[in-house]
Image (cartoon, rainbow over all chains, first blue to last red; front, top):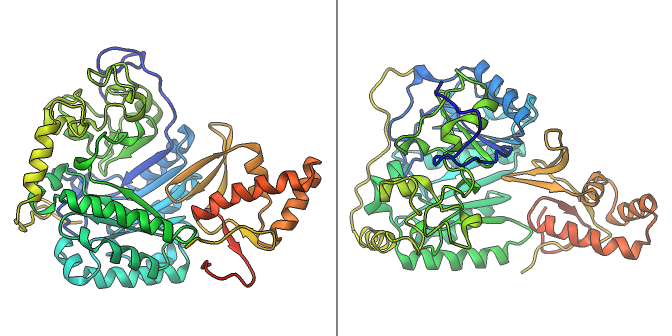
Length: 379
Length: 104
């Protein structure tokens, strides 16, 4: 375990206030049958033999509930790639958590879904496209679309509330109206339309995936019209493209303010991409209590609050709104995790970011770099 | 173009995936829903705690009036507004007779 100071302090030594976490992202495994080229997992995937056990997860969930976590998101990789998914989900429920399953559907059978009936509160099913041609190409897995539709049918029969998670990018953004229609046909209570975040794997696929400015503007119109039309029937949540925004997102609602991420091997992170930030040291739940890590881990405290913010953020009236934006994006583009998120129009790097995004969006490159596990023994 | 409207003849209820929760760590009551956790004030908690999926909204309002010794006209508007917001966000469902437009 890394050395922790007695008083929680940020990366510049300012004392910070430590709140209570609301949500936990539990990455049960990095294994996944799909190979989506924008996968949010790190480019260096955790090995199967390092994965936390069922009992370790159960203990983590109890610790999380004691610390104030209300909702747990069971994710991956593909959580169904774990044979003990039902046991893990049951442990989360028994800890008193609201259990959300985030899945591609691949690996779930009707019998496995029925085991989760009364255990999982809500299911989020990923969508790569509105037909086999698009979805199977993007996911790199033949037959994935048809299997996913079968799983959606079982989900409806059992009665789980369902959210469709549509990940959009240049290759499929023009089909957004049909994605919303599909969600409606499947009886979804909610659709989440999320534009690809260009970190990790997605950064390797910027040229084929970067949406055009015109697409982003059109998507906004489609979403607004759908919200009006579907009010009271289906919620439409939308995460627009970063590169076309004026101000950055409040990443994670503020660094280490409400969220905790547990990687498959037990590393505890303030966000799923935090390991891309050089110089931060992370603790492992196998070596420390969650409450201690939450309060004293240098990585969690590094960017808490606003005292560490440099200019132009320090003097900005939005500093309590977006907290300087995404640290991983600052790392990736400015090579400095303390920099203003280059997505912000007030960042000195913004013009470069926009030019690069525009150039990528104008590319006719459609060759995808798929997310694959490095060769290793499968369990 | 609009979804279901709250009316006293409807039976409001919390659908599967939406539930009240006692947050002992923070000492508050919350409504848990997909990707949402909403802190409830005592009034919101009182309203939602009455939704049993059996009684119409009119009956719920009568119960609330009795409990808080307040006239129906005063309570009705607040209850409708509060529930309509949750209906629009799919956190409360309505079972209504002869209602066009909305889906269950």
